[in-house]
Image 1 (cartoon, one colour):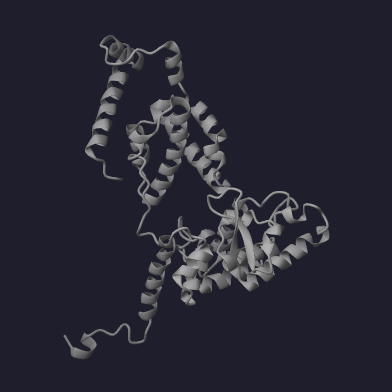
Image 2: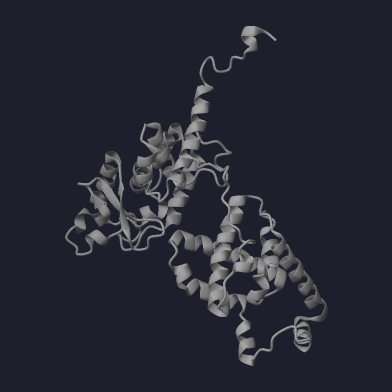
Length: 369
């Protein structure tokens, strides 16, 4: 949990005190007492009606607003999942469909997040709540979320390094994928990931016209850049595999006017992109079947589809490609995002040197005790 300064602690203490009074005397009686003592400004009936916004009303608004619709599809799915968990918690603590104000105080949010031990998990939930409550507060109450920002702090786990597949694991994955269902498609997906380092949503949205053989690149919709495509280089072998799949699947409709708009990976003849969950389930099944991947590595937040992107970066580094060129190939905005692979590479070098035949000898073996 983050450290709270004195101001936040005072706010939490105040909210807990008010909550206790409301539970003892009732919220309406408390409000009327504050009016009588001139401790609360008089409000018109219309203003009071505006203040009463139910959680269900706020949720419905959020899922239809630009703040949500502008998110990547994968992020939308994550936020829907997080919303479901949050609403269930609200119903459990506050009853069926409470007002949004009841479940957006620093005290309530602190209690909701208090049981989460992993910093990354907490930060993901906090990011969702920031988005939801910022939109809700601005839309209904014309105010920001300054008072709860510190409660919803977002801090990445700096000790958590990206997880990549070993070369032995990748060899087995490439064998297993050819033995399963949709072997041609899934092998092409896997090889495209490994040959370009693109993200899951970028791969699913690839269209036939995005492939440029002459420049040896594919056009992808970059992270956070809606509708804007940017070039991404791809290895010659991965490009050959990708083009062979496109030829196999779409060669018969090359003269159709929408040929270049067809999605390469699709379940409905290229009219809509393959859902990212299909790729995630395919990878999860392969990882589960792979005997070179340990039981610990198969646990949550270990190896996943995104590990293929990490593998792409790490093996570039091992091959002698500079960190600056890797930044460009990964399409990172900041070098610091790429430098994390240096830490992984350094750990790999330490592990490698410890395998030296003389690496386990101790000074006492030579000089005695």
